[in-house]
Image 1: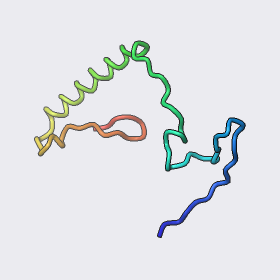
Image 2 (image 1 turned 60 degrees about the vertical axis):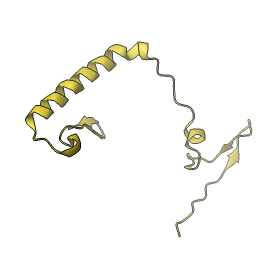
Image 3 (image 1 turned 90 degrees about the vertical axis):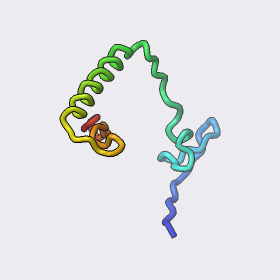
Image 4 (image 1 turned 30 degrees about the horizontal axis):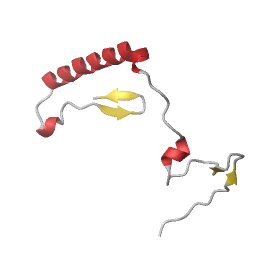
Length: 84
């Protein structure tokens, strides 16, 4: 059996319960709604990153030997961004 964690919970003035830390059972409630992300403000950056990713991907495709399911060309997400 797994261990259970108890966190002191208090009620806010609006009646919502504050557990002190995000509760894993309801991530939407724990972390709130996603912020607005208007594309118009960063569309040029998005397009530039997309083109650079295509260049790096095509370069890797040309320089590596083919593997099943294109395993030789994906990008991997790491702590500082994307890596090949």
